[in-house]
Image (cartoon, rainbow, N blue to C red):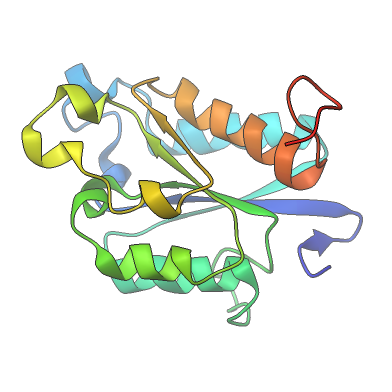
Length: 174
């Protein structure tokens, strides 16, 4: 299994366009937590579960596709570029690409990598163009409108389902 790093498994936290501006851009919608603070908190939560969290953000659609392919193990790791190898799952907030990117949809749909879609705001309560997700139909699950807690919920789901292979309640089949 390529996603094992020593005796630890890895998960990719992937953030798309404009999420580098968390804490600065529209704090009334996205809150005051920065991307660095989010990554630090999620890394700590993952570490407590014996999981390594690789983090990557890009405003460039093709770089997001490359990261997904590296996480799925179909593209080799690149030095100094996360993820550092195959991952058990991916937690992904595509940002605005959610509503427009057939490229990201096709990448996710064509990989054997569970991808959990996350949105900080409730996109279904916002502008009409945000109501359609290109990613949701090919995602392992979606976490929408839970603020930063959505990322933690997605991490918990990825660890339980894709690392431990347990359902809910624990021990139940998926």
